[in-house]
Structures are given as C-alpha cells and as structure tokens.
Length: 379
Image 1 (cartoon, rainbow, N blue to C red):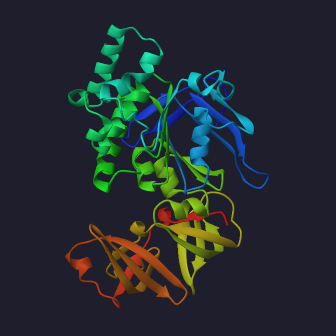
Image 2: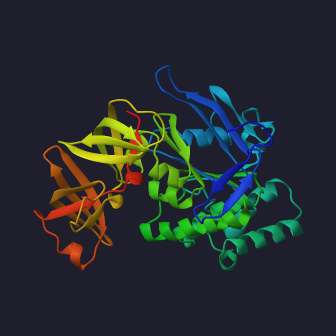
Image 3: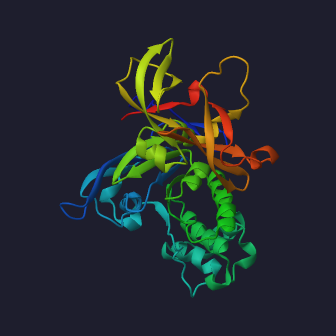
C-alpha cells in the first residue's frame, strides 16, 4: 500500500457500505511484548482507520488480548511503537490515552446504579452537573437504557450490563474503543442479538473500534477488516471476504470456517488455468495468475462451493464422482463426507431439503467445482 498522507483505503463493511479514509487513526508498529527470553509475542504491526471496525481474531494465547492491553496502557511494550494520530501513544499514561476499554466481564461498579456507573468518568473529570446530566441522559437513551437508569448491575440482564459498560466507555468521547471479548459470557441467542446491536451502535457513533475475539463467526459478522493472529504473529489482515475466500496461509484457511485442504501436483498452466492432480489421478483446473508454480501445492476448497448434481451429457468442468460415507445434520444444512478415491475425501455442504435428507451412506454423488473456487495456498 502506498505511504503518505494522500493514501486512501477502501473499507468494505459487512453491510456493504464503502468508506474512504486517509491517514490511519491508530498505528501499531513492530509491537513486541516479552515475558521471558523464550516467551513473547510479536512483532505485530497493523493500522486502523477512522470509523473502522477491526477485529483481532485468533485462538487463546495468540497475543490478541496482550496487544489490546498494550494499546490501552495496561502492558508495557518491550519493543515497537503505538501511534494515535500524531501522538506516540505508548509514552502516554493509560488514563490519558483517550481510548475507551470495554472489559470481558464489564467491570461495572456493583454498588452504583446505571446512571452513576455511566457518569463515573465524567465526575472524575469534574464535568459541571448540568452538562453531566445532559450527556448521561443522552447516552442512556442512545443505548436503550433510559428506563433502567436507577437499577443496580445485578438487576440487569447480561445484554443490559454490556450496554452500560459500552456507554461508560463511549461517554468519555475516546478516539478509539477497545473491546476485549465482550460477548463471550452471553448465551447464544443473546450473543446474536448483541452482535447486531454492537455493530449498529458502532455505525451510529462512527467510532474507530478494535475488537478482540476468538469467535470466527463474530469477527466475520462485525468487522470491516480482520487481523488473524497465531503464536504471537499476524497471519493475514483483510476484509472478511478476503480472509474467508482467499486465506494467505494454511492456518487461516483452517481457522476460519471449514475447509477442504488437499495436496496437489502441478501439471501446467494454460490460458490462465492451472492444471493440477489430486488423489489418485483426479485432474482439476483452478483460475491462476502468474508463472507456473512449484511442483507441490496445497488446494483449499470450501464445502459449500462443491456442487451436487446429476451426471449430464458431455464433460463437466472439474466434475468427479464420489461415494457418500457420512451425513451430519446441522439444521438448515447438511455436511456430507464424500469419498472420491481411497486417498481423497471431501466435505460437501448442502441445504437440508427433502432430496438431500433422503441421501444415505453408499449413495453415488456427481460433484463439480468452479475453477474460480479452487484457491492455491503456499506450501
């Protein structure tokens, strides 16, 4: 990406809206946190743009929460720098960093009601009473808590407690809001509801947001971009679609969704098509740009991109036949395990309808896949 103040980034949001931004709001440059000579994370580098929703996604212990705590000022960097606009943020005390943090457990004051929890920071800042009351009232209305302002935290639902925590962070008008797995303590139904509310609230506020999660579905649904971390390093940064459809590494392909990862041998490249061989003689074509790759490849194919159909007259591009081994019922969908040859098995996702539910192990299935849906990973 070109450097300089004129640099433009197009951010594709989960709602399809595109925003153009200039200079980054926050820059993390070569962040390293060492705990022992053998245990550290980093170097980690990424940028977040004004109004953008960036998720740090990865398994437990990958460094995403440590990165967030370094930005918030609760951890000291061993190396690297963090910039908020033109300010070197890692040299600023935590309470002066102008970032808001929503904790995983919300960290509400149990003896204070909703109003006083939200007003806490303004009181510390000695905001005049009339202005404080106006701002707290407006914030409670914004997050839908105006009618419960006198309740204590233990009298609220999990979703309401989360909204109090968000309101308390946002009312101080930070430039960046940090979320540390705020939905992990909620049940599935409430988590889905709060996911929608979080995204809608972030859009209304227009706040730059960094969101830590280990939940891939959550990251895909909420984010403008996702940074996938593994073992203290960033594997890939991209839009949800880029991360899912064009993973940069085998780890990303495996961690995001379900993937068929198949070893392949290169046969050649003709007219923008890469010819490969998988299993015991199955030849497939993949869209390809660039020179002929190395002999050994790793192909990624998402289960929902494999089509099931009747054998037609004439050849079908990337068509092959397999034997159904197992069917997993997933409600709306079925996940089929299909044996193509003794060394090759594919997972195939299909909608659960009358015809697919009638499938039984041993059925012979005609399958095909578009060349554009075969993605080549570096080995």
